[in-house]
Image (cartoon, rainbow, N blue to C red; front, side):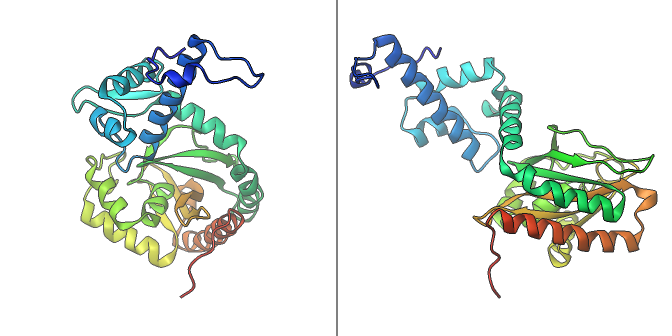
Length: 282
């Protein structure tokens, strides 16, 4: 139960569905849950990956004291994470788990599944679907390679957007201001010795990705692992995530990456179409 004080006396006297008046406790609980949901949605919709109590209070029209009580409860439940240094909040592991479960129950994995299976049949490598999560992304589902030596990915784990084929495909498809905000949000950490850590070089790589329609990674996120990925778009035109083919670097030569790039572009375009996306006509 949320212990948020209800300042609107009308809430506690609102008739219930069966025509009886709600008790004060019921009114307070309802008000607290509504405020918690307001805060959760505000953090999820924030342009930056984290946000402070003052910003939340202003955007929601609530007092800082009320917002602070709500976020403190959500931090205790692992739904939010709190940075002691910046005094800012972001969605935490609990939110990731809920989001992953919600995504798994949505249509996108079902829509993507036959396309992933066809990619595996054509390439004999693992095919994956990733979903964007703010300035990060996670693998939502995968179809494994039939080969004895195969790539497999960890579903539900968050990865940065600057390293790896699936990540770069998403980052390249974001709006320019979002890309620059993402790159300015923190250092480009080295996940392997060849991870791109220079923002100007990464922007050049993203431009190349946009021109050819797919991203290539040869050991940038994980040593020895290669991937080719293309972006998936929502009906609104916003990038949803990406589809990739991944395998050992030793099996993805220049010829394979070009062919796999064509295949993942086709698969991602068809999934996007089924999600309602219609690219702008030139």
